[in-house]
Image (tube, rainbow, N blue to C red; front, side):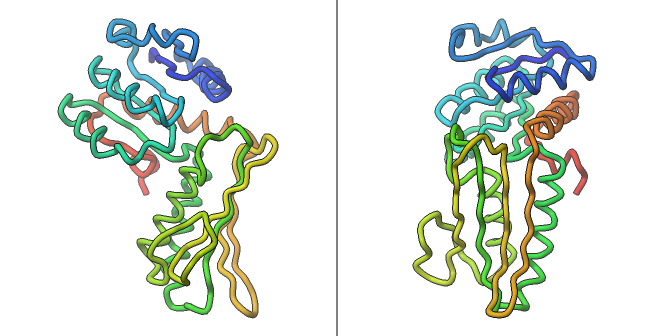
Length: 238
C-alpha cells in the first residue's frame, strides 16, 4: 500500500514507522514547509492518504483527497462543525473517508464500555457523571475529540444529561468535562459517576502514540476497495 502522509509531525512519524513495519511505503510527506506539494498529481500516486494536521487545515486537505480520488484516513479533531460539508463532498465524489476521534483499539473498547455503563446508570440517578481528560500542552483543541465522543455517547444514552460543558455546570443536566493540559501526556480520559456514598470510575490511559498509530494504519488498510464514510465501529465490528 502506498501512503501519502498529510502532517509529518510526531504523529506522522509514528504512523510512518508502523506502516513501514507492515510492508507499506510512504510516497508523499506533507508538512508546514511544503504544503504547496499537496496537489492532485502528487496525491494520485498514493493508494490512501493519512491526515493528521490542525482543525484549520483539515477540511481543505480532505477535499483535496476527494478530488484526487484517494481514500483519506483522518484523526484531526476540532473541525466537526463542517462535517456535513465533508460527508456531502465524499458522497459526490464517490470517495472514502475514515474518521475517528481516537484510533487506539483500547480507546474504542473504552467507548463501548462507556455506552454500556451510561445505559445502566439511567436507573441510578443518584450518581452524577463528569469527565476529566488530560493531554500534552501542544494539543490544540479542548476538550479532546475523544472526550467529546464519550460525552455525546453519555448524553444520547443517559437521560440525566442534555449537553456538555467545559465551564462549571449551571444545572444538573450539564455534563462537566475538565480539560487539563500538562507535560507530554499522550492522553488520559476518565468518566466518573459520583454519589454521596461512593463513586464508579473508568479510565483509559495511553502510554504513547504507538497505539494510535497502529490503529491508523489498520484503518488505512481497511479502506482499500471500500467507499463511503467509515469509522472504528466498522473496523472493529462493534
